[in-house]
Image (cartoon, rainbow, N blue to C red):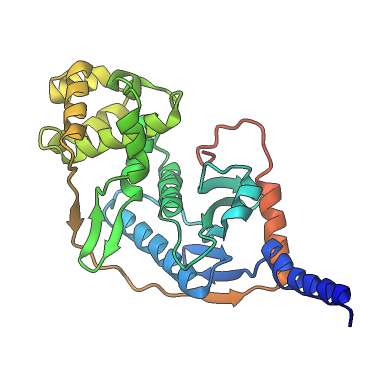
Length: 311
């Protein structure tokens, strides 16, 4: 066999072995009562993700007994490799999203190309958007800062052996808070939509919720503030009535809260329930192609919509 033919055969073998798998990697399907995860990762990492989702869902519902949840089919979560995520979404600045497709709401997140760990940032995004999904079923219209701040605040919760850890720092928000010139709390609380430079708006919304939840001067009446805003009170009036303060004083308090350098968190005693896996299937190549085709169609640009799940 000539050297030229041998090189061609080696190239062909490489393309068959690695080239095709990079386009249509093997997909698996794992289902519980509340989620269906379609993943390009292995069984262990897919199980880790679905447990995180189930623990988060059960904790949120258990500690919000007034929350109503419309029963729907299990929510589909698609987990793809980073480069495929970029190709499907056209975005390299995000790691996860929540959208509504032809078959209803779904989430998409990217996973590391190497290793067995999911990107923590992308998992936070899925949990953040899942809070929006739950809120949308309650029919309560929250102000953007409160909607986004609460979602960020809850999205970094972590189930441990001792309970659920609440209030950990949202690390993805720190750069904006440290480097950018802050909005006034008046601008944040009176905004009808995400302000220009959305990263800073999200970061300050998270920090404001964190302070209102933890700081002893605000925490006891935070629920009263939420109720007042939901019932239609203007932010300045609600601040005056509940905390006897104005936006300028709130600006000073928020900056002081951040500048002290260490933000509090706490662990809620809580026992994670057992997760029952209803189905685990290694999908065929044709099934994988069908999944990717559906995602491409669902993620095509659509006309503007008021659907709160599209973020």
